[in-house]
Length: 280
Image (cartoon, rainbow, N blue to C red; front, side, top):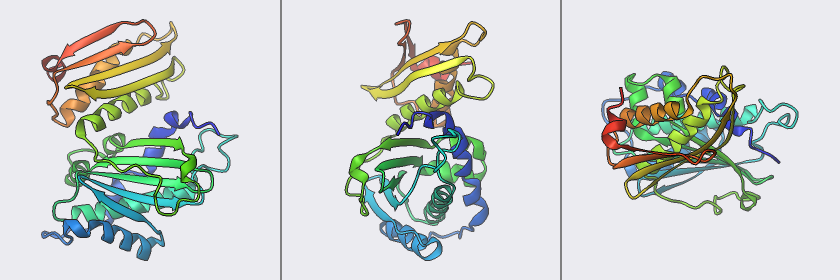
């Protein structure tokens, strides 16, 4: 099964999973309802009682992992219609889980910094992973970021993983503690891919690779994006603008420089922290 078209559908899928649902379906008391140690249990309890979803949760340092074993993830018509990636019932289930995460986190004392939702097709062995930052939930609730922007802040991945076949408990998962710098590097790479797959641009660009990493205080981005002569857009300028926007949005300045490498031409651009942060 080929899942490469997932990247171009990421933006569409995120629209189904927006935090607007969370914000319009919950009320929040002035005092925290849940203690940090009870967050995993409460999410499992609410999803079971209200949505009949059996989840497995694990709090690993600063990251809450939520595992949802499902009989199906990929839409049955995906092979004939690439716009139908995720099954509608799965979208509803993911939405309900996200609603629950928002409800509990916004009513909790000291919630974890990140959450990682993994829904696995236990018949085919396909992992759908969504990683979010708790501060983004709070900003959405406060109205400081609109829901389309909140959607872009999810990290979304889908991968074939044979170890997920028959896994009801999440034993095939590799739990880790999410780090902000890695979260931002991957989010920026995802945004770059989505930018050049927007409706008005995708006919001019062919994305072969976009990767973002963080190592020794340096953000490193590699890309292989081909464009037609008809496009006047400068790819590197677009990438730099996205990097600057994301790092400024998160007020993240714990880095020395940014490296951007065009894998097609071999050109490399190095920008200082001051240049990125203070980009006009």
